[in-house]
Image (cartoon, rainbow, N blue to C red; front, side):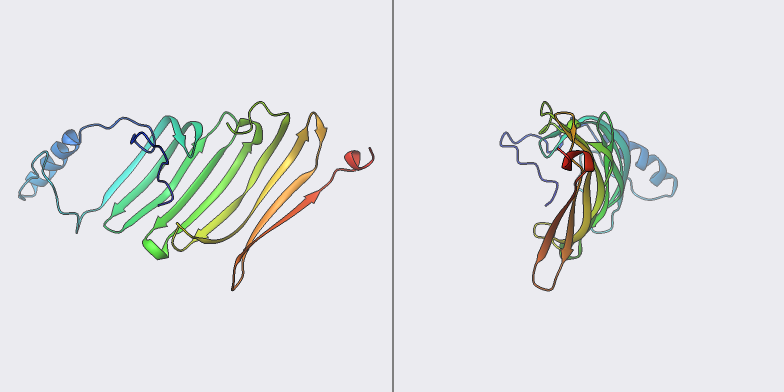
Length: 194
């Protein structure tokens, strides 16, 4: 699965504390009892054949794919065999990434978009003498262990040691036989004249 952590210590994939669902069960029971149905028992195992769980919230100080994020927000729903993320955002000091998708086996879809994410804010780049902004969108389809996809990622306003580098673009295209990654660069005239 795409969001599985690669941690070896067995910890939570997103590094957040777990809590009791008993207050939520109590709130549901109050409403269910009003309708004259048999309430759930706390701590009970509920068959998930006909259940839908919807969650909306925010997080602080999250780690995702070995990258620390200041926070984020999400809205998702779960049904057996389907998880739908209607919106999710992870934020850095400047910029964010957003994603939405439907996870449903071989017919899964995931859309990732960068919103002014600064290259120098990424943990893997911090301290390097490079700055820039990541913009673009990538769409992934199919089994997300081995997806197909299309989209474009641009690194703009790029500087190395305070010298402009120009913009770089990576385009992702699907062909009948393979996924192609095409890279192009736009050099600034100032850099070319040196």
